[in-house]
Amino acid sequence: GCCPLSPAGSQSSQILVDPPWTPAVLWDRVTLTCQGSGTAGDTIWRKDGKYWYMKGHDRITVTQTGSYRCHRPGSGLSAPVSVSDDKLVLQVPTEELFEGDTVTLRCRS
Image (tube, rainbow, N blue to C red):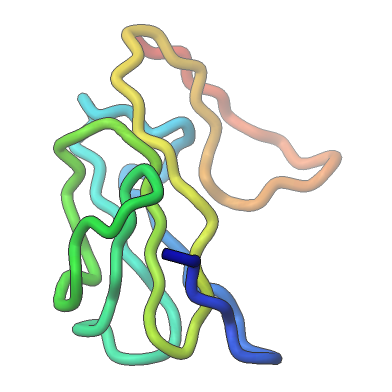
């Protein structure tokens, strides 16, 4: 099927990542929370482009690698969040960064 479209003027859903580092790694016990307009109980999750969790889960703990997206009726589809199982990662905070910002990097294995 086709991805849900946002009504004109509406905003996309957003996924909050905890712990707030990217790339997210499975061994961090990652929790994803979908935020957007509409009822939390109507949240729809996609994993690797396919419907995954249907309605009722606005927060999930990730147990599989993949690319995750969410959406609530009234909000568009979120940007994808990838969760890997890499053994060595260089991570940056998930917050939006601008030129000139000081940033902490984490090299983890």
